Length: 125
Image 1 (cartoon, rainbow, N blue to C red):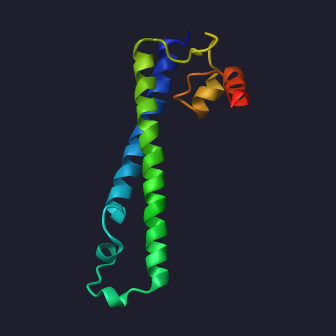
Image 2: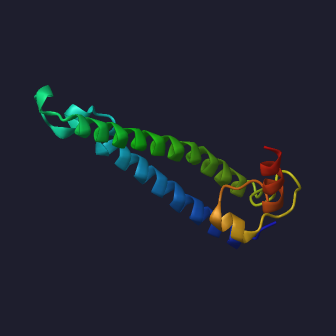
């Protein structure tokens, strides 16, 4: 099991990641993701649009929705990792029960599988 000092380090890492994600989600919402292309451009005439502009606007909005969805899915994983830290269950592979390496947790702080078990899981797919 990781020491209290190590758990505090991972907790700080996860909290920073969560704050970063929340900030990014806020930026995506404020960047016009919720408005129509016409509203976002401030134009009042529907005839002033060019098809290329509409396509670009649509693509940018789709990209924003994709990133928001991906970021939103990560938040619950980070929350559960924080819960595991509080229960002192953090960093233990849910498959084999071994300690997940620090390097893996630094890269993927919400990981629940050690690299060996994750590799086995990926091969099964």
